[in-house]
Structures are given as C-alpha cells and as structure tokens.
Image (cartoon, rainbow, N blue to C red; front, side, top):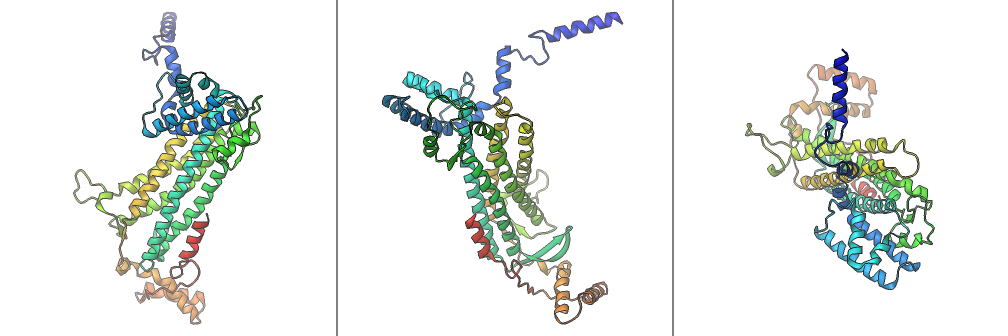
Length: 444
C-alpha cells in the first residue's frame, strides 16, 4: 500500500513538471498563455479594425485641437490612417501573431510610418477606451444594417400579403384545423410582428449611440481632453458623461444588441418553421424554387427546405445569446475585467448570422409560390363552422343554441360549409389594414 502511494506521488510530480504536463503541446509557457489570453481576438478584431481607425482619427484630431499634436503630426497621422483604412477595405490588412490586437497593430504601423507622431497617438486614452468606442461604433453600424434588412423583409411580406390577400388557407390551434386564415393574413402578420422587433432594435441603437471615448481606463484622464469634440466627430447622438458609466457600458451595449437580435430572431425562426411545415407534402401550401432546396443522397424525390431550416437553427442560437452574455457579466463589479474580452466571441458571429439569415429570407420570399386551391380539400370544410354558427346568431338564434345545432350537424354529417368569408373588423381576413401596418413600419 505504501509503495503504491509512492508511485502515485511520482506520477503526479512528473505530470506537474513543465514539458511533461498532460496539456503540453511542445509550446513554451509564454506561448500557451498568449493563446489562452488572446484566443481568436486577432481574427475578431479584423471586423473592428475600420472602427478603431475612425476612432483613432477622431482622437488625434481632438489631441491636435488641445495642442498635444502639431499640425505636421495630425497631417501625417490622418494620411497614414486613411491608407490603413484602404488596406482594411481591400482585405490586405493583417494582424500578425506578435500583436495582441488590432489596437497595438495600428499603433505599430503608425509609428513605423511616421515615427514619433505614431507614438503620441495613445496620449489620453487606454486600450479599454479603444475597445469601447470601436465596439459602440460597430454595434451602431450593424444594428442599423439589421434594421434596414428587417424593414426590407417586412415590406416584401406586405407586398406578398397584398398580392395573395384573397387566397385562403387553414388556421390552426393545437396543430388542429381551426378557422379560415389567408396568405394575406399570414404574410402581414409577420410584417407587423417585425415592427415589434424593430422597437427593440431602436432601443439598442439608442444605447450604443453614446460616445464612451475619453473614459480611458475607466476613470478619466488628467489631460484637458474635449469629449464633446470627439462625440461630434464620430457622429454619436450623445456621450456617456460619467467615465465609470462609460466603462460599465462594456457588456451592457453588447447585451442590448443581443436582446434586439434575439427578438428579430424569434420572429424569423417562427416564420422559417411555418415555411418548413407549409412546404411539406402533408400541407402543400407553398413552394420555393429547386435551387433553394437540397436533395437526398438516396431519395431522388426529395426537395428539402435546408435554407429555412438553417435560418431556424441560426436564429435559435441567436436567441440564446442574451443569456450567454448575461452569465459573462452579471456578477462583475464596476471597472474593467478580462472576462469582457469574451463578449466578442459571441456577439460578432451572431451579428453575421443574423444578417445572413435576413438576407436569405429576403431572397427566398421573392421566389415563394402559393397554392391557390388549398381549401378544395374536404378535410378543411370544418374551418367554416364558426362562421356558419355566427351567421345563425346574426339571424337571431342564441350563441349557445347555434353552437349545439352546428355540433349536431357535424356529428350527423349534415354540415355544409359556406366558404365565403365575411370578416369585416380591423385586422381580419377581409380587412387586413395593410396600409396601417406599412405606416407603422415606416414610422419605426
């Protein structure tokens, strides 16, 4: 027993010595720490690069205004930052492994090209400052793009609603045939639901449209910086006045964007699910061109709605994002913490998935064809039982007696449906209020 314990102790000691640990891949410890702490920041930072350039130029102009940069300094800095912006746009800008992030890479390039003026660019700011303002600019830009895509999709849905407003289809409750609906009602329902989502997007834009630049490491600067100047220069609506509040916006701004995207994704996921159902042979309510479907490796008849299934899946992932970001940030005290670096790993790919899903939905719905003869199938006759019942009530029969009569007619096989709908109230099949919904969409 004693001998066994000694052997275990030797084994533990061996595994605990550098170069013999289970996680050792032959890399020096400093490289392992770099990989762990930097992660995939370099790749993610390429997305933020143009925003860091924009913020750096605004900061430099402010330093020039308060006489911390000379006329020659600001001229050289502006020229080289514009050159770097072109390289970023062309895709030739890279962040090599010796640089921790985009911010250090840009400062290195400036210093290499223009000397001491490049070294002065970090005056009166912190890397936290740089990350904050770049992320605010990025989120504002992306949310505006998402908003534009949602509006385009909603407008397309309203156009389809007008085009197919008289084509009836079954409405369901509990996945059981319930009451008559229509493509006009279905398309415009999603268009108006997206309006609700845009309220969340607008709220998120309001949150990120505040300039945090000038908070430095989170506690301001002893330099006489002009934060109102950079706010105007960067096109922010206002600034985050309190420097600690500015630092605390890191995480909050990402969560605001995530909640907005989650709302859009929830509607889009439901829409995609409807399409997957409606395209199936059991429903056969609509179809999309073959190029938007995929086949089977063994079943030659298959036309699978992979585009809409992936939209559904990606949107369901996006709906989990607010929870992920909340767990990263919900027990952090004020001030900066390295945990915040991990926010980018969730928010940036989610934004790309959100935009891609909206773009694919826009394209796909331009190709959708609806089945105009759905209700010719006898199994949909009972859709009109409520309308028939209501007609009896309008003729003077009590609702309860009419309900019993129609129920007995159905049970005895005597029920004959009248398939002309007469729904006149606001928002019903025969009064879709498409102009009102379009007005809401334009207003939001």
